Length: 307
Image 1 (cartoon, rainbow, N blue to C red):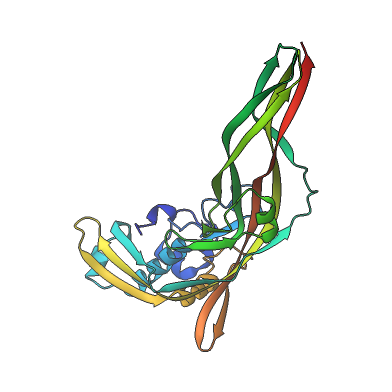
Image 2: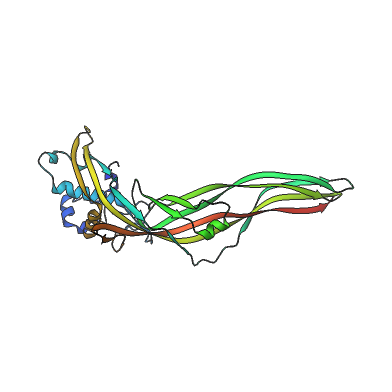
């Protein structure tokens, strides 16, 4: 991970920590809210609270840098350090996502004409024509996180699509992998085809259309996750790329410090510290909405007119 110094600027929650106020006076860190969250004093109030875990780690590194600084390391300014975080020994465990229907009224399917053609019969006898075509559309699942956390690397969350959605859709994938806390839309191609014989009456014209019905559904989701393990952080001097220092610590204890030192948004309740069989973990519930746009059926529509 590259240095996140660019994220650390003007923190509305950081000033309560006297230790950091002394260390970073006049240049306070910004909050751990991700770029997608809008809860700062200058932004409209929303219900979206996504904590950037990389910023939390960055603040912990700043804290450790100040506490362990020696005469030798003091020659290097913190802003001149490249911060490389190794997450390989941090485990992200998740339960299956739970989907709930929203309070919005159910929407009816809406039709879309993919292709139409005309068959004209000027004779005195019924004629048969071949109606054959193939068209491709896209169906999508849009994931919008409203509460939880994000991190730059290795933060994938698996969503198993509800069986009811799979049954009504045109072959949607049963599972998606989505970056933790980051809004994304997953799209899939779906192919529609028809190979029919159209009978046209004498002295008439028939319009044949390939029509599909699409349906939009919204579901709220909640995913319980648990973080555990240790991170290691390497500090290098940007000017000469020389090694400066190495830190290693339990990610759960870093999150606990973040709570105690007001590095998290006030009243956010993003993390809960727990223990199971002697192993500490930080539990969090990722919440949001998923908007499905699905192709559900196809049919051929015929319109006749006399010549």
